[in-house]
Image 1 (tube, rainbow, N blue to C red):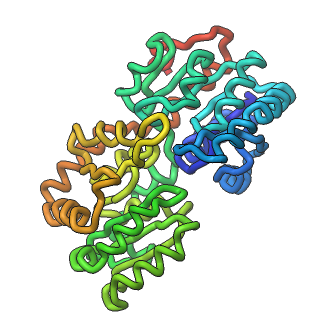
Image 2 (cartoon, rainbow, N blue to C red):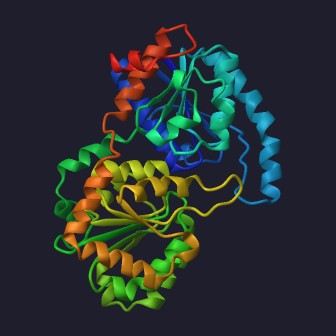
Image 3 (cartoon, rainbow, N blue to C red):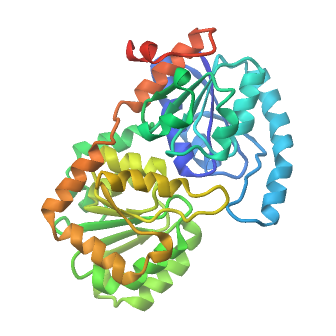
Length: 383
């Protein structure tokens, strides 16, 4: 089997695609070609995994109007031309896209070359990339049941979101052990803060200003994002004394150690991207979600967060409302009320689909063997 895999820009798109590609290679000895953008996180993660990687130019629609919007649009036809040639030369049997702006030229090139395509939708509402690809996709997989209403029922399946095997395996580690491995105290609750692979400046700033109060009742492990690390470090040092910071750890980015960080956490304060939410679900973690604010095309993260809030799996604070006092209040109410924390853990687990990667991989394998343009739910359920 020759499989074209694409998805990129941020870790939220790359890690699910990497999980699928790795499983396809291990289970089916598939020949993998990962088609990514030339400026996304995949340029680092995919070559490091040992998979074959080819980069193309891909245009990105910014969340705000700027000159980058115009230059991004100008890159689209260039990337499309590159992708068509690469896919034709590779002669893929099947293609899988996990989102991000690079998925559009990759998916379109696959279909123009007659390659069946499984398009994966991670957030509850589809973004522009998947809205463009959905009519052409052979099959569509979604991470959340709430997404089913956006796509044709005849070719859409709710399979969950692919997770790194390490994120599933880390459940065998006790939280106290995970804390020790990360240099934290095993006997104190841990608040993990992450704004995703690129960081979140406002979230970082509010957490730093809240440190004097937070560190009175928990440890804080903060992942700032590489570009925001120095300014976050300076702010943390200016708002808290050295004695209090014994229970504070700041890192720019975590990759291999991210599963340990999640396992060590008593509670996570984070954005509400689909991959992050599926990791919270898999590990049964309570959370305080601060969705990325609306911009061009709205905020899929606000819709994602609302789904968790409805089941009381998370507290949600709008980005504009986030301030130190409110954050401390919400975090303390969870950490200091074990019964509530346990209820949130169970609610989070109700979203978990631990076999998502396997289900998607089996669906891709079926599509590679079929010549029809649709795949039914019954065929997947019979796997």
